[in-house]
Amino acid sequence: MNGRLSGLVNGLNVWSQASDGAAMEQQRAYAQALVAIILFSLTVPVTQQALGNFSPMTIAFVRSALAGLGSACWIALMLSTGRWRLPNKAEWTLLLPAGLMVCWVFPFTLSLGLTQGAAADMGVLLAGIPLLTSVLVSVFFGERHGLGFWLSVIAGTFALLMFNVWQGAGLQQSGLALIILLSAAVGYGLGGRLAKTLGGWQTICWLCAAYLPFSLLGAGYGIGLDAKALAGSGKSAFEANAIWALLYLAVISQWMGFYFWYGAMANVSIAKVVQIQLLQPFFTLLFCAWLLGEALQPQQWVFAV
Image 1: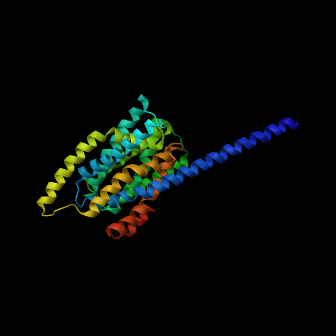
Image 2: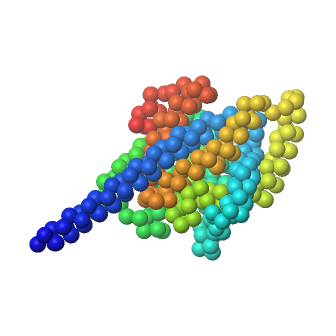
Image 3: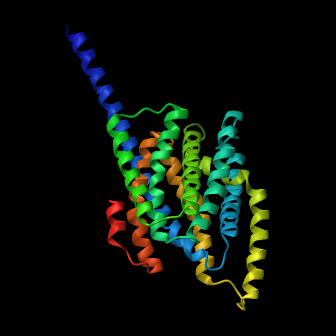
């Protein structure tokens, strides 16, 4: 009897320790995701600043090229020390489409969208990404969640769609917004899945490095066109604010932010981690007011909440 009781107690202790470990891992993942979202929330207003001198195409290629250069150097170092490995065939099937979305499609369409609307409005609209990402990982990767989870996410997304209607977005903007949201969802979903086998930091480095040659060509071509347009306008050099904004997009938005983002997804449900992005409108609205001087409207706060 004493032996059975002792075995039961030991089993409960092991279960308790495992539960505590899982809870701590989840809390750590949420903390990482929150850091990433704070960093990402600056992407919209900073992109708006970069658009003062650079075209959407240039912004997309330059941020990918600079992040790719840093990633390639880091990969070379890690491979030489044996700390990292090459992605296998199955991982490449996720890596290539995820990289296309994260490195090119999302940055370009986001920048293009900001030439047609206010940065604060775009910040609220981007909070529709969690629902699309959750649907993607549920359909393709078998993640399962309760009814309460889906009802809350759908309610938030519906509010954001109403916000888009409230702002009177035209067909072109609505179509562009859909591409922005889908590209982010695919990049987050596939990248998050890849992070579970390859690791979070390795994932973003390989995504950026895979497209580095093409990103460098596109960046050179885009900067050349922008420099020609700048000379035609009578200006002698790119503005310092635009250059710093472009550097932030490359180093933080395209690279270091994903260290925390994919790192959070590596060991916890992708759909649950991505819900932290519903907090992004708050940070983006504040940053838009601080950096761009945009007036915050009551309806923006209502829909963000």
